[in-house]
Image 1 (cartoon, helix red, strand yellow):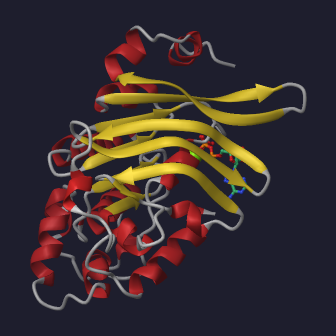
Image 2: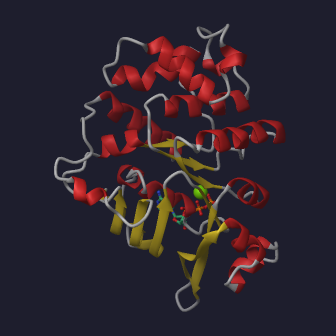
Length: 292
Ligand SMILES: Nc1ncnc2c1ncn2[C@@H]1O[C@H](COP(=O)(O)OP(=O)(O)OP(=O)(O)O)[C@@H](O)[C@H]1O
Ligand SMILES: [Mg+2]
């Protein structure tokens, strides 16, 4: 499923990229509480009649790394996709509630979803470089945005940010498909940062990588968080504990009467607390490995 949505996004990027996220927002709207960048309020996501997640309210602060953890199927990817309107691209998906970014309701009619995805970029579980050169992969976003000059500089800066420059600087015109999995994932991060986003959504970005490649991506996330706000879904508890500032634990609420499972946010807090002193028993069972 991820593959087809990625393609649609890339096609959308090829169309217009408007200069502003919303023609209706005003400066006052930016004055949200403290340093909250993204705010989800009572978000429900339905796939057809099935409610996948229920009443999720979650704030994300600027320059933090927020980890979303929880058992398979509890709705982590679904929630993550709400933050850049990726669920719009899934047939039958419907989002209710409010998600705001810098005080602007992302689901407002006047907001252009393409611009939302430019500001709030995504890196997927499986590295998905285009079958093009390393250079063309990174230059892709700026090019479709109409940029013609300064591409070499953008490519170099983005590859440096993604800690890949030294490994590829002598082979920029070689196919990206010839890179290792870990290099491909860093290339996808370079491609995401080349369009100068504000937020990066990462859905299990290291699950296909070995421990060394994983460590490089984690290091990279620590370095780039001064420029970005990062939301990461991970099944790796150590990873969440190592890299995130805040952790949100989700689980599936099971309705035995009709055997439906709905994703809920159990608790969110500083990562240290969630792992060492969670307030909910379900969180404790999960982080200590006693779950299911
Ligand atoms: N495109 C879709 N159409 C219908 N149902 C979907 C779709 N995507 C997800 N779901 C359902 O929504 C629920 C949440 O799925 P989601 O992929 O968000 O979970 P997850 O926590 O990311 O799981 P995992 O850890 O396995 O990736 C699941 O019951 C899933 O089957
Ligand atoms: Mg998922």
